[in-house]
Every structure is written in structure tokens, then in C-alpha cells.
Image 1 (spheres, helix red, strand yellow):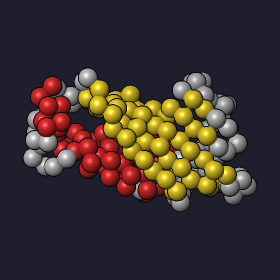
Image 2: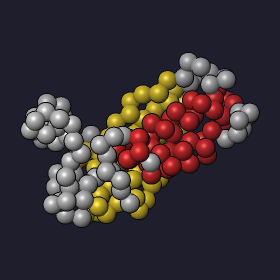
Image 3: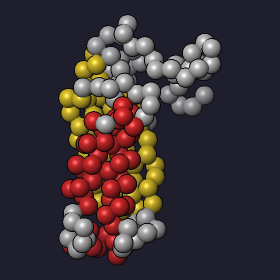
Length: 161
């Protein structure tokens, strides 16, 4: 079992072995928050062009932030067993580092289930958007290290990576 796992039972698999959406109707509606993080690595040339505003498609950082927010709102349409959630807050931050950008998404709701998948989806799509907008300069960019770093609320309480 991995770090943070509570039990070996998978809640998305029924007793008959069939995949199912988890029934959350008996869970309490509580404030919930999740933070996910990932990284986009790229060449010095790509970084220089982003930071000088020379990317021909426009500003990849502004576009990536918007794409991440939009993706968080569409998570239930993209991930088959996710519940549609009414999100109260989505923030996508891009922090420059020596070899690229750290992408971080913070998502909040008051619901019966958490927003971990929404935060992870926001990070993944924001990173992919940077790749899409900068690929003409650097096709060897890397996207990785996408993981949940914090979660609060719900029955399982707090988690920190």
C-alpha cells in the first residue's frame, strides 16, 4: 500500500468486481481543499522566449492558468468516475525555476467528496498548455512530478505529502 492509503479495498470496485461510481450520499457536506503540483522542464532558449514575451502563440503562462482553471471545472467530464462538483475556488500558480516552471493548483469546494482530482487535472492541463504553446521552440520539454501535495476536509481529514 502506498503512502497515504487507508486500506486495500478500492471504493470504485463493487463486491462483484465491476467498476462503479462511489455513492457519496451518506457523506457530510464539508469544506474541502486540495493542492496539487507538477513541473514543466524546458531548454534555456524556451525559457528565454517565454520570459521575454517572444512566443508567437501568445503568453503561455496566462493561457496555462486559464486552461488549468477550466480543466478543474471539467474534471467529471474527463475522468469517468469523478463526481461533478460545484467548485468555489480554483487558483493555478506558475513559479519560474532554473529549468522551467512549477505548476500548482489549489481547489476548494463545500461538497460530499474531495477535490483532489480537480487539482491534479488543473496541473496536468496547465502543463500541457505550456507544452502546446512552446513546442515549436522546444519539443523536448518534460512534464512530470504531478502529485497531490495537500488535502483537507472530509472523513479522511488532512494529508500532506
